[in-house]
Length: 239
Image: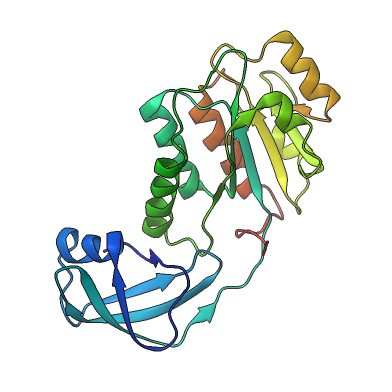
């Protein structure tokens, strides 16, 4: 059974009922039975153990223990990227959640154009992956937007880098604390004017690996390097 199931809001201690997709998943996919234990979480650090008391056709009844709040520590890892096609993009969201990406910024560039809005599906993938890997905090998926609008965003972290083959390695450049943002280009790289705009917006060139990486691979490598750099805590700070 997955490590945790996300509900909002987290129910108080005592009897509770869940319905909808979660109830269907518990009853018909996982075949939950009375007496089974599970962990509920709100995606914002709060969680509570619960015991299944009854499984009905469209709902599951629970007895919920007192909730606990996870410590809000760590540095936020933000990855901005041009989504690859279909399954590769979904792979990025799933495994990026497992590695520890806190904020996903999908971007449209000169070489990657919108192919239909998939934000809701991406959010479902992130939620399922976070439950499987036992994350206290659900990652955030920013609404997809054009690269130019993203670069004008005044709320972006001060520590910002653009993945560039042959540049100094990311761990040597990134601070050990605070939010860090890594911008990853599409297949074929950014257009010349896009690369210039990123540099003008304060993005510093940083290397990820000795080889050129696919977008989805680069996202995971960047997140792993940031999570494992000396002095970097393991969890994301409270928003």
